[in-house]
Image 1: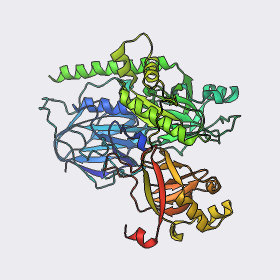
Image 2 (image 1 turned 30 degrees about the vertical axis):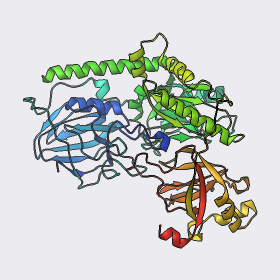
Image 3 (image 1 turned 180 degrees about the horizontal axis):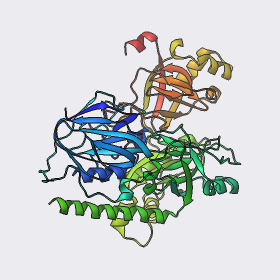
Image 4 (image 1 turned 45 degrees about the horizontal axis):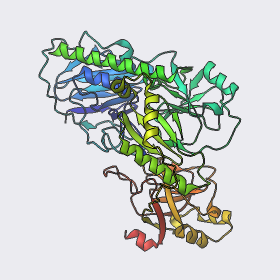
Length: 323
Length: 236
């Protein structure tokens, strides 16, 4: 045992970068809803980017560690404490045996990702350590964490860095560690079925504000607000959907699919949120007001490539700092 | 054949526009496109997901842009590679139909497992026994797998057995339940909510995450149900 879950909080699960290769069998991606945040947190503590960490929803997690570990987290605006000291997003804390880590309530946003040096040691199921909460497999016994669970952490090989600070003064770039916004804007590219909607729903979608419904989870964010009705009510043949897809059921109220979404769907797809903005989407919580703005596919690809280049530089920089 | 972006990291190769007018042919063609794309192993492609009339291709746009530095975008580059990988797939003279063996799925149509058998019979205006006979003598094909891991959508339901989904979905359906939803039949592999009419249950485990591949059935497979007794079900 290396970590005791004193309080599991509202919904905390073991996640890595998700499960790929099994969509043809109906297996969802799962994984950290903001996989970039988990990658950054993992790099900060010296892990491989894809090590398993914890996804914490709305806070409340309280852990105690048995041995020396580094921890870092990224995501919404949470008050996090190491003992009596605050641990802001993107900073690295050096914990010793017996230290406790506590996540308060989210001020802005709703999720964050905690990386622990070594990573969480759960069995790999279908090539991933992510928890599939809907199908109940992977992660920690195929379920969310509960009070009293004992987490195994993998061996951490890195030699001690000789850090003198309990909490690092340096940090990762702010827009990586804290992507949540009070006025979220999601950039999208046109959906597979964009042309099935006429001017009225399209104008509503691109100009109006939508409110995040309480009926949202890791499968998808549901929106209240303007209805996006189609004139053509013919049924569509089910085909693939993906995290980021915005589908419109007959109610006209759009649903933005997230990591736990099913692999195929039959509702018209009006738009797709671009990959870099899934970090913002993962922070949406009930009552948030959201706007959508269109970008071109090539721009979405440029934004993604730029972010990868920046992360590469960050990775090199971290290596230099630690050598 | 049409190629449409499904966001910035996936695209849909739409092989056909319609399904119901030629289900068998369409499934063969989708299967063929899936296999050709798999064989092509295009760099940057992460995985493929077949459905009724299409194959979705998930890719890493950054990996494609990095390795190719092409003047065209990642989508255009990938589109060209896909087109050349699947060229000639619709050519009927070359399409040799390989008939795969029929996989038998034992199903117990016992009343306890079939709360909606009477509703299906009433809708079809035949007896419950006739529903069982029809359902268990027809041949089906796995059109796609989705909804929950391992849920098989089977095409080939005799038309008169087609029954609309229940108005209010059940909150929890036991694993192995065999149902009818519209013109399709299928098997619930996991405990899940669902709106299909339940007419039986199979003792087979359709989804096992600790096996690879994790599902008993694969897209394109031919399937037949064989009726078993309650005793046979229990001793499975």
